[in-house]
Length: 161
Image 1 (cartoon, rainbow, N blue to C red):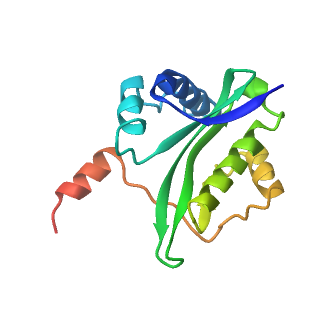
Image 2: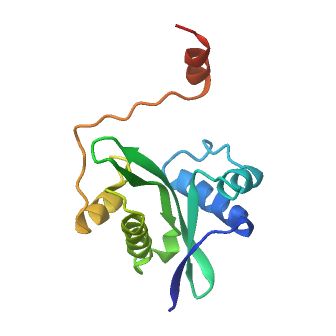
């Protein structure tokens, strides 16, 4: 079995959307995906894309993907690599694809002088938590994620000061 991780290209947009939908089903949010192939093409493959994607292939078949972007740590004075999503098809798990994607991203972070490589995981996703612990990642339990989205984001942005 030959495994390869490569930078995604525009022609991968439909494959990426399929993986996003599969991930949403896995995360018990099958109706939450609003993304489209054209949005993926426009946002991930434009000239000044702010997020990037990888495709993991086994014997030429796409079996997983990752989307990531760079942030900045004011304390470290360095950029960080933030993993937005990683997904490996359920029937292809256990063959090292997830670890290979994570190692590829860790190498990318180091090559770009990043001080951190971070991501979040759902608290009920024990297989992922066990995997992340096995590679030496440490949970940041003292942080709580906050989010504004949809009507709340619009309302707050338009409320003035």
